Amino acid sequence: MRRRPRRGLAKALKKLSVRIAKGRLKKRDKILEAVGRLKERFPKAHPFVTIRVGTGPRDFTVTWNVVKFKDALRRDGARRTTTAPSSAISAGLSALTSDAFTDEVCCRAV
Image (cartoon, rainbow, N blue to C red):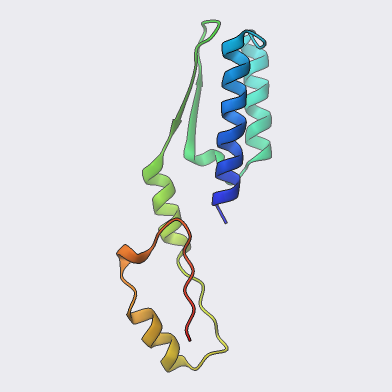
């Protein structure tokens, strides 16, 4: 669920940095407006990124907080189906370890 907004924000920030680097966007106020629009457009992804706009003409940095993102993925957990018998669900979930959780977390009880 978090992957698509994160990728969209990363792509949009890259485009914004190219605009700034080429000199198409110079004024600090306009850069801040563009950043604000991106934060509105990607509300689930912007807490994982720190955007700093300096006072210089091309002073724009983006820092991703990877630890915070991984913690959010871990909190999301795995989906659990309730249509299967509870013994099958517990057997399937007991086989998983904390290392099994990756960027796309989904487990099904068979």
